[in-house]
Length: 301
Image 1: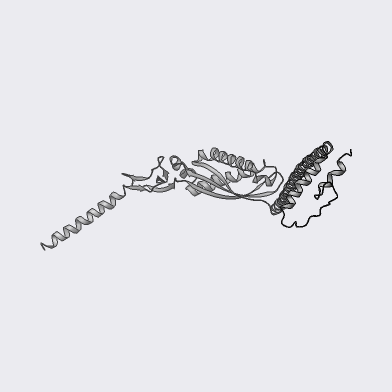
Image 2 (image 1 turned 135 degrees about the horizontal axis):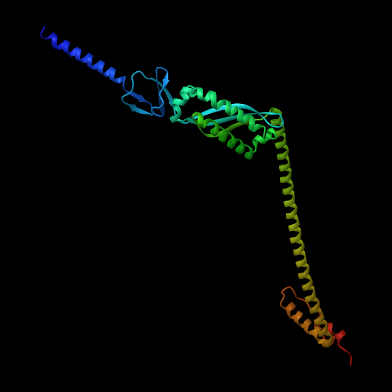
């Protein structure tokens, strides 16, 4: 009996401690990172939200709703009519987050985060898309960079102004994809093909023009070379004519000039091993070969 009492006392103490711990845990609340806790007591929403972390003490009768206050992205696909009455499909992304300070108001007026997005963000986004589409003249204008920038800015500012009082903070609206009506896509593709064909023709014309310019340059170079060669030949001919004129003048003034040149030729012939036989006219006053060439030029006395 003595041993049973300590064991029984230990069990009782352990049970009491566990009970105290469990009861104490009812007064402790841990909010996960990036979330806001909103407490309700008997259906009444507490006006103050609880940020992430450990909170002691809290009313154990609270019922908790958690709001994720981290950045989120909503994807939306909508058909947007332009002024030409054509429907263009736009895929947009809305980057937003819940305003933690307004989490109690969101819970009281709308519900949880999904309800706030469904009730406020999505309808307003679709309305703005249709409204902005009316300012676009043609469906293919959606592909213009200026049109996309204007559309994104208008959507972002419109959602910010509308959703901020409702506890949703919008940081950006981005256009992810644009899908035009099929017949416009085909027309654009045909237009691109025509433009590519024109570019190819332009490139071919440029190539031909370059080749013609090269041929003209080569022809000009050939013409210049021909002119230079003709000038060189003309100069050479003038020099030869001048030389002949001088020789004729020398012959006219001195008939013995030919005999002197003949004597120089005989000297050159005598040095040629192939020259073996010479014919000498003994009756001539100039018996050596070629020496008589000047006789016709020598005046008789």
